[in-house]
Length: 459
Image (cartoon, rainbow, N blue to C red; front, side, top):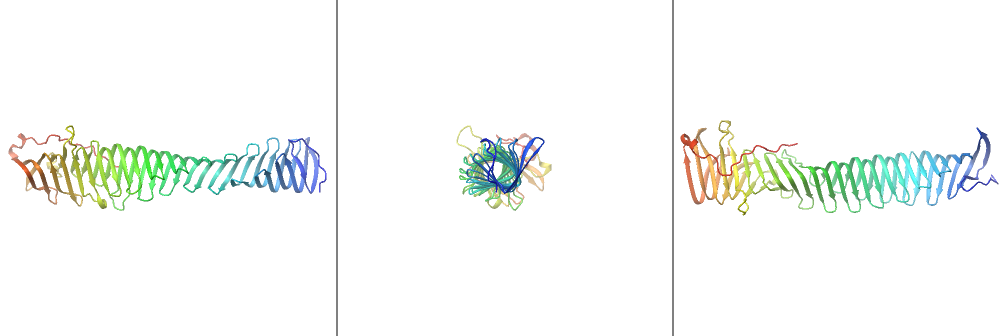
């Protein structure tokens, strides 16, 4: 047992104990070898190990075997370390564990600065705290603030979410996490992926940007956008820039909605509001408008702000359009005219499926128009207020003129081939038949006729 040791200045490392001690001079440096129950001290830092080499002039010690370093409430454990007395810094190898009242950190190797209370650990890093867990390739931990800055396959697990990314800055006391590179945020009802994201765990809200994708775990819905704000408590999300919604169905009738901005309300009943440059695709149902609302629970779509709908060979326009699609089957489309004088008439154009008569369009206009479908085929059209129609007549697949009909409360019935089979007018019916021979002298379109071919496509 060493009984007496030399006294060093306060900033020098002081050897307090060793079972065996020897000294030598190498290249002008004073070196001591200590073995067995080795103990050093420097200020409030205490060091213990099995054996050590002390470079007295350089104020450095190399520690080996069961290394334990203590500073106040900090414990640093490793098998091999180099401690630099001038800047109170330890470089640890062969596995390292840091323990303090706030967290336990383990890694393959690391550096700890006792003056800055800063740890830089590398290799299979794991941070354990009652409130969170972090795993990564590299991590910088600041004891005073409990902030962690991690790189390489980072996973942060809290009560509210699991966050994965290439890089994560975790601000424990602010309950804030910033992630970048291949970001994934998994919460109770959603999975968000993006290039970058900021998550506030206490408020359960997230902001993400760059190739954002949100998978809703409750209703098989996937939404995309350039930027998103997600509020988990409110089940509300807003997406901006190239927003897209895909409602995945077992059948081929998957719903696609595109817009500049989209709001998702995921509480029952859940619905989505698309704004600006809206395009909707569901099988043969195609539409464009300024504002579209998709009610997932009721399976309905509401369109406003210059809406247009194409359904198979039909084109529909009006002030507002409302479609019912229960069980992914188109059942009813309502085309409505606003009461304002400046509003447009509701209009239906039916394109002839026969290529030979492709330039002939059956037309219907009026105030309100209701279209009823069976197996996605038009069955009945009901027109209220100022109903007008033009439909072309055929006999044995040959053109045979056209009929013009007008009145109030008009009903138009279609056969299985979706051709007009009967027209009924309840009030003030008026009709005119134009024979084929003089059809070129008759007006072939109703006021407001505007054929459009800019149908949306999946992208």
